[in-house]
Length: 569
Image 1 (cartoon, rainbow, N blue to C red):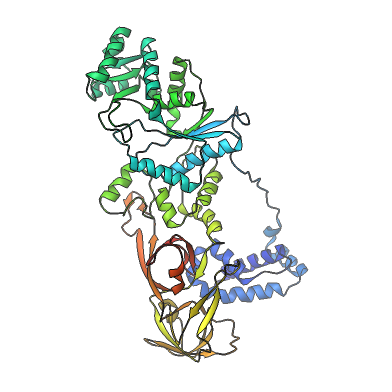
Image 2 (cartoon, rainbow, N blue to C red):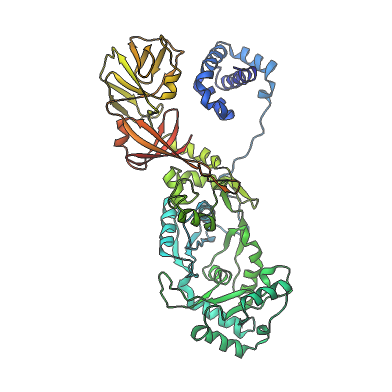
C-alpha cells in the first residue's frame, strides 16, 4: 500500500477515534476510505489488512496520545468547522399569509412524468404545507393533438407514488366556457383580434416587429372572425392574437397567440370543442380564477411572466405572485420527449419504465424511494442556476432510506464449485441485516458450495478462507473445482471473507445494471449491462419490489422471480 494511502487511513482513524471516546472500528474506516477514494472499491482485500493494523494501533493509544499525534501530524483536524445551518424545507415566500397560500401543479398529459415534474410538484405541495394552505392538481389538457389518457393516468400514478396529496383536482378543460367568455371580453375591448395571416408571414412580421393587416380590423370584424373559427375556418386558417407590442424587446409580447383551431378528438371531451386556448392564456385565467396566490414554474417560462400579467391586467383580474426555478435533469439522462420517444420506437430502451430513464416509473422500478426524491429536490432549493445533477447525488439520499430496510443476501457470479469436507451441520442460520433486527433465514447446505469466480482466483492451496456465516475452510486443492476442509474452532482472523451459495438449491437470476444513457450527445450502446448470477433460495420468498443488498455488490430491487435491477452501490 502506498505511503499516501497509509497516511490518509491513519488520519481518518485518528479523527474518528478522537471524536468517539478514543476508539474506532475497521468497517467505519473502510467505509470512509471507499467514500473518498472509490477507486479502492475493487481492492478491498488488498487494503483491509492494513486498515485493521492501523485501527488496532490507534485504539491502543490513550486519548491524550491520539490528540498529540493529531496536533503534530494532522493539525487541520482540530480546526473548528464552520457550522452550516441546515434549513428544513424551502425559503420563505414573499407576500405569504399563514393559511392563505394556494399553489398549483399543472402538468400537461403529453408524456410520462419525470424527475422534472417531481421537482415542480414537490415545491408547490411543500409550500402549501409550510403555510397551512392548499395545493391544486390541475391537468393542463388543452392541446388534443399531443395529449392522451395514458399520460393522464401515468401522471396520477406517479404523483400517488411520490406521496403528494392535493386539496383538489381539476382539468384546465373544465373551464372552456370561461376561456371563451374572457376571449370575448378582450375582443370587445379591442385588446385581441382574429388573424388569418399564414404562419410564415406571422413569424416574419414578429421577427421584423411589424404589424399585420389583421391587426387593423375593427371589433365588429373580429367578432365575425371569432364566430367563423367555430363554424367555418379550418385549422391554421385563423387564430386569436393578443394585442401586445410588436416593437417589444421581449418577443413573447409581440402579439402572441391566445386561441387556435385544433381538429383532434380530446381524450375525455371528444369533439365537443375545436377552438382551444394557448398555454399562456389558459394558465393566466386559471391561476387567477382558482385563487392561486403563488404560481411557480420552471425558468424557461420566465419571459412569459410579463405576458400573463398583461393579460390579467387587460381583463381586470387578480394577478398571483410568479416564481421560477431551474429545470432538473440528470447528467446523461435527458427528460425531453423529443429524445426519449425515438429511443423507445427504435427499441433502444424497452419502455418508459426502463431503469436507465429519469421517468418516475423508471426511478420506481430501479429502486429509488419517493422519500429520497423529496429530500433531494428540497436540498436543491429554489435556485435558477441550471441543475444538471449527477445521478449519484440522488443515490446518496436514497442510500439512507434503502439501507435500513434492505435484506442482505449472498450472490455469486461466474461461480466456481467448492467441495467442503467435514461440515458439522446441514443448516445454517444467518441474520437478514447486520444491525437491524429483521429476523434470520435458514440455508440448507451440503458439501457442495458455489463461490464467485473472482474470489476463487485469489485462493491458493493450503490457505484459509472464511465463508461468511458458515466458518473457516482450509483449501486443499485448486483447479476446475476447489476442495477444502472445514476448520473447527477456526480463529484465524486476517483471511479473505467470502460469500457463497449452496449449489443444490441456488437460484439463478439476471441482474440488470443501468448505466449512463448518453455520453455527451451520443447514445451509450453499453448503457444496460446484464449479469447472470446465482443467489440464495430465500430470494424466491421476497415480494416483487423488495429492496435487497447483495453482499459486496450493491442494492438491487427484485423485479421478478428471475430478475433484479441494480439500484446503486
